[in-house]
Length: 312
Ligand code: SF4
Image (cartoon, rainbow, N blue to C red; front, side):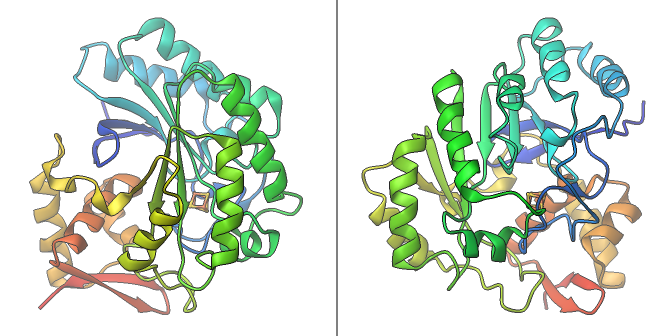
């Protein structure tokens, strides 16, 4: 069966062997982050609806999971913000009832966490990976470029409330951008709110490739180490310290080979590669990151976007 809304299992550094569920139409999000690997947001909204039919997703899940494949996680992520699908709670409940052996993770920008009903829909998940890139509104606007009306103060309060209600793990992710959210002042603000949110883990991350805007510069390792030291009383890790992606079960060297073969003929964007190789963009991005980490490919900015080519 060809799946339209499932992808992978992907080699995830954080989640091991992870089956992706994409419950959103490309590219629907309440943010338009400057570092987004899925490209520019074409539908900037916080309207919740059944962007993808819940019945269709459940039918695909049933087909994929009935032979009882080995998986570490089933993860909501993909082409935008998964909590915008109004049926996310129903899908999680279905999985927990029919396939309780699988752990569920949700990657979210946490923009809708101030709505109690959304927090309630996520309660049965095992791990929530929310992102929080700024405490100050001006920095939040600059990095996340949200739909009008979303404020970091509400997101933070939503996360504080969620922590009190949610029995599972919260691994909060912060994307650090050089000169934007890595100032001493902003890091001090983060420190205060992180103590209130009380995540189980704080993951410091930065860009693996050039950003969509010229002014977006990845934070270097030294900066991440400095921030980690300032958060020394908190459970913080640097994502780059995680195990190499290709050691993760399910890492498929054939996909690597296909990417290399394609871009050695002509440089391609991630979108081009996703279409040519018929691999979901979120899955493809994991391989592009791994190939860049290994120094085998390079991203070059051009007017039509970021092109990948083989490194000489
Ligand atoms: S919240 Fe996630 S999907 Fe949405 S624009 Fe930001 S990085 Fe992309």
